[in-house]
Every structure is written in C-alpha cells, then in structure tokens.
Image 1 (cartoon, one colour):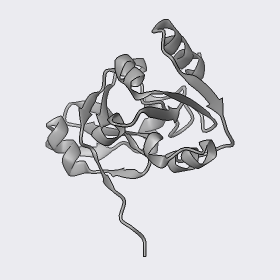
Image 2: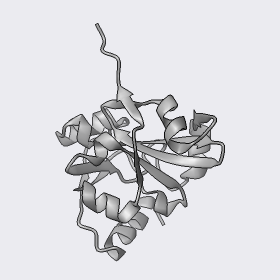
Image 3: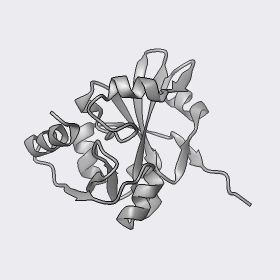
Image 4: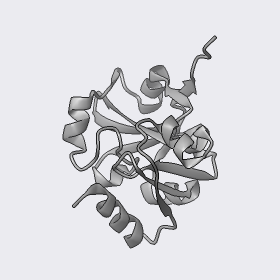
Length: 160
C-alpha cells in the first residue's frame, strides 16, 4: 500500500482532523512552505538520525537546522549521525526519498518534536511524496504521534 494511503488510513482510524493538499513538486521543507504559502516555522522537516540505540525521527521547523549536540543531550546518546539517503530508501521504501512523514508510529520509530515547532498552532508535513502534504493542528499531531518534546534545532547562520 502506498504511504499516502497508509497515512490516510492511520489518520482516519484515529479520527484525526486534517487536510491533504497537493502542490507543485517541492524537494525541501522550505520549498514546501513556499508552494503552500505558509511560514517556514509551520512546515516540518523530518530528519532521521542513528544513535547508540537505533533510529530516531526528528521533527523540526523547516527554518531551522538540527543541533547535534542538543540531540545527543536530549536523547541521551554518546553519538548521533544523520542517516544517508541509501539508508532512508531502505527505512522508508514506500516514500519518495526525503518525503517521509513525521509519523514514527507507521515505522516503529521514536519521534522527537522540536519545542519551537511544538509551540506552533499548526503543523504541515510531507505525506510520502514531494507533492502531497498534510495539515493539522499541532495538538492533534501530538495526540496521534505522541512525540517527545525536546530542543533539537538551532537557527541557520545568516548569509551576508
């Protein structure tokens, strides 16, 4: 079953309130924000890391970067590395590369939601493709996914 359909079944079975939209192809979370005419802070990017005890799904605003020092501290890891594309293909075979939704429930993976994104009213995320996105209230996302709320991100350095 394609991921989009699996995600819809999961959301519907859990009586989630959400909307699904389709936009022009967008490969990065920042491009999704532009395509959806949303502030970058509301669009989630999903980053998968591997640490001492396996894989972890990090969810942060598209406007921020992963702070690996914070990740190691928050998750209690001695080391953490970003998972390369070859591993992502194996972990998420039902998704386009880099378009996995931050719903670890579907993959048996723990989810960690950055505290700044947790404070937003709305969250938008990829739904398995570079065209499909799901929009929902962040409280609803937290109810469904039950992520651990931690500080994971830092501001991107400004270009001069």
